Amino acid sequence: GSASFNHDIQMVDNGLLRMGAGGDLILTSDGTNGTIFANEGNLTLDTAGDIILDADGADVIFKDGGATFLEIDKDGNNARLKNPISDGDVLLQGNDGGSIITALSLDMSAAGAATFNSTVNGLTLASGNITGADSANFTINTANSVRINIDSNNSGTGESFIVGNNQTAID
Image 1: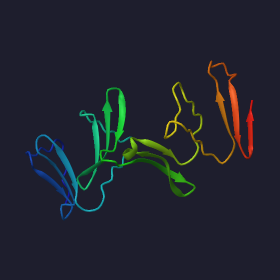
Image 2 (image 1 turned 180 degrees about the vertical axis):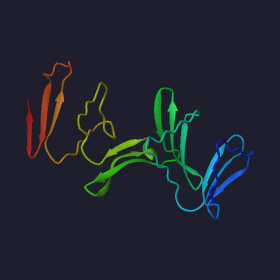
Image 3 (image 1 turned 90 degrees about the horizontal axis):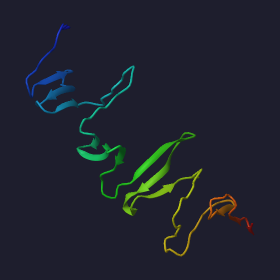
Image 4 (image 1 turned 90 degrees about the vertical axis):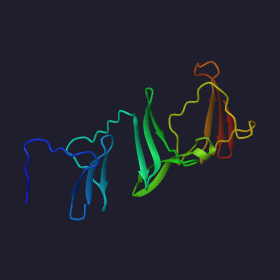
């Protein structure tokens, strides 16, 4: 049968609200923390509007089998994504023509070294030194020619070096 209430349903601390023949979905609160258990299958949040997570503790924590694998938190005025697994990488993946690709990999075992799967467009290197792994070499791997503009006075009239396809030119 059905039950209709025209006001609140109040339960004691540690009481359980069970739904389903086998308690498939359980809601509970111990007076401080609330928990939703989906003992069978998945739990779907489906709404006509937005899904809003508002955590006054500033942390949203993702777990699998009790082990934390992703944390999103507020750090001052910054939003921070963190993989708390020691040396666990952070991957940004997407669908490219029907295939899942890794567009960006941040290697946490190498101090966050970034590996892009393809081109980095619109890159501007600001002040500072460019060094290679041994501080003596800088390597650019490219399938085509590469133009390097060195503009020490920010006038747009710097020196240009073009290297590639069996040609070397210095403007």
